[in-house]
Length: 176
Length: 176
Image (cartoon, each protein chain N blue to C red):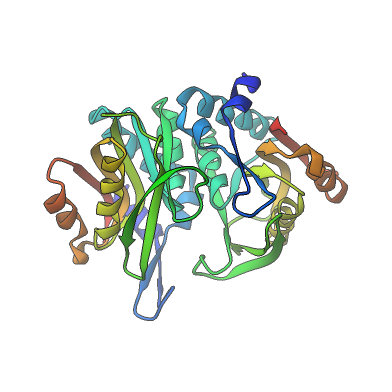
C-alpha cells in the first residue's frame, strides 16, 4: 500500500522556487482509499501514544489532523502562520526550506500536561517541526508524537527532530 | 446543541481590520464533542445529496472537509489561494469582506459530472462561495451542496449564493 501511495505523489520540479522538487500530495487526498489509509495509520500512532489532543499545522496538516481527531473522538488545536489567530498567542520562529516563517497558537489551546500528537504533511529539514514541538511545550502540552505523511530522508529531518526531542516518537509514512 | 456551539465561538472585535468582528472558531474545533457534531451534520448533508467527492476551501475549510471525506469514504479535493498548487490549475477571482483573492484548483481534481459538496468555515457576503462553485463547475464538477459552519446572516450571503445557483443546497449551522 505504501508503494502505491508513493507512486501517486507527483513531483513538480522547480516549485515554488528553482531547485525545489515539490511533492504534490493532492492525488493522495483525492483518492478515498489512500486518504483513509493515511488517516488510519496516523490514528494508530496517536492511540498507541495515548494522545488526548491532536495539534495540526496550517494548512496541509489540517487535512490529516481533522479526520484523526474525528476518528479518535478528540479535539484538534491548530498552529497557524503568524497574524491569523485573533487572540493571545505564543509565537515561535519556524524556518523551512524556502523561508523563515513564524508559527502561532492560542495560549489556551492545550491543557497543562495534556498528551498531544502534532500532525503535518511533510518533514524536510525538521526545523519547522522542532519549532512546532517547542510551541506546544511553551503552552504546557506534553508532546508524545509527531506524524507526517512524507519525509525527505536526504535532509535527515527525522534525526534532527529526535536529537532535539529524544522523548518524542516521530512517524512518517512515505520516504523520498 | 447549536446554542452551545454558538456560545463557544469567541467574537474578536477589529480583527483582522478595524470594523470587522472576527468569529474565532478554534474553541469549537478544540472541543471533541462540538467538532464531532459539526462533522456529522455536514456529513448528513453530503450523504443526502449523494456527493461522491468533498471539496474544501483553504484553510479552515480543510478542518471540516477532511473528516467529512473520511467518514463517508470519499476523496477530498482542495481549493487553494493562488500560487500554492503546483500543476495546471483553473483560477477564479474570489472577493471576500477584506480583499480580492484568487482561488485555484488543479484541473484534474474532479471527474466530469461528479457530484460534489463544497465545505468552508463561513459564509459572509457569499461572493467567495459563488467563486468556489464557479471554479468547480469550470473543471466539470456537479456542485450539489455548499456547507459552512457559520453564516453572517445580516450580509445575506446565503440568499446571494442561491440567487446565483438556485440548484444548490446551502447549509449553515450557526447564524449571527
